[in-house]
Length: 333
Image (cartoon, rainbow, N blue to C red; front, top):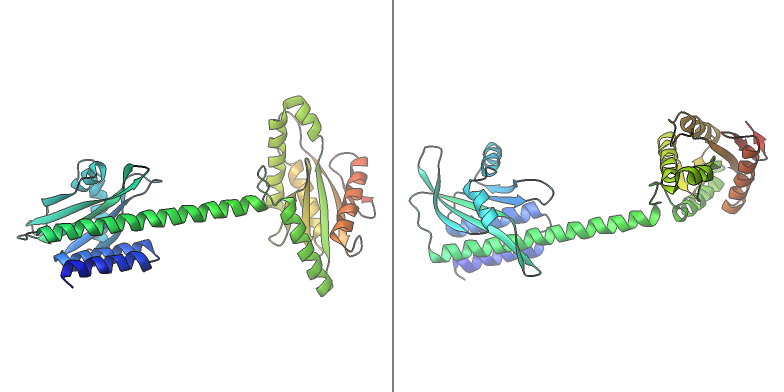
């Protein structure tokens, strides 16, 4: 097996088995340097979410060299920036070593094609102390390494995109899109788990049903977008008021549920009442909530019974006016 074939085999293996993009690019730089005798090499990536080129892997360079090189290549007329922009490889003397001697450089754009359109994802840069002559085989090897690197970058980005989409769908399946709180599906699962834990340990769980006062009037007077603003404001207070062990969820049009393990349910519910009362006016109205609180096991042995008790307590709280809290069996405060 000749040197070029060995290099491409090593590059293909790095692409096939490498999991981390930085490591894969480092391996490809090393394979290219081993085949062509390059003294230095660097991989610059064009991040779609950030301006300019960022150095991702390097060979024969110190971290200080990396930072200096990265700053230099982001000048519009730098050869690396030109190669990234024009997607054209170049071979020649374009720089100087620390002692002022010329360096023979190779700049290889990493190019992928999607839907018939070529897109640059970065540049591989190599340097040799002069005098050095690149053979046709050397150039072919470097171009092939650049193609492998482009595939590695594209694959890593597609994998990252797929992971982000999966996380997004997972999050959407468990959260309310308007408020970002848990949805009813998550609420039901968490409540069942907390009740089972409390039953095993002889503990307590509080379930508070929280209703936004006068939301229908806000919708009628100012529109549903105004009502959504009110719901988001209340949701923010809920998220900031609860403990790490608590769960808050959107339960209905104007209702939320708080699940509070332990004996602190009343304290957390009162904190929510006070936090909402302290909010600035929304669309010319002061926001308030009413709360109905039920406890396991005294007010219900199942999630259905607890929610029903909390709903009855909420009706009692609203019967006393706005911004009130009632506990099952229908005590108000």
